Image (cartoon, rainbow, N blue to C red; front, side, top):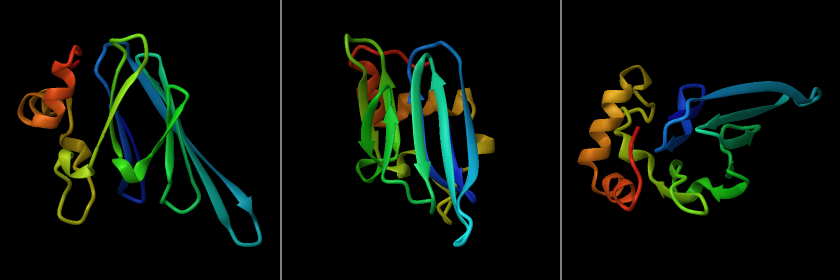
Amino acid sequence: MAGGVWYDVPLFVVWVGEEGGGSISSDTSAVDPATKTRLTIFTGSLARVPFECRTTDGKPETIKVGGESYRLAQGPVLLVSKSGPKLQVKQLPLAVLHPNPDGTLPFKDMDHVYFKNLASTNTNVRAFWNAGTTTQ
């Protein structure tokens, strides 16, 4: 699992079901010095599935996962499986992760046990993984 956060507000979460390790990084640079607009690019790879999300205002519209673009308005939580010939992606609302009342995520509490429990208790998450995938 990896996520992008803009001033404590979650932008996206990518959750790949297969093992393989991974990483995420972000880079912020000035785009327009006159307006002080900044571009932040989140890039990463989980189990060899690359992803990228760009924003200048903390409200990105899309994220690329495995070379395909997904509209974050359709759900910023992306479940990803490599079990078929093509990546399988299911988008869910942020509420599936039980955000704090202020909309931030309790990342410090989101460890392997948290996600394993979520995979067995949330019907949408469980249905996705049970359709031929495994949670790691």
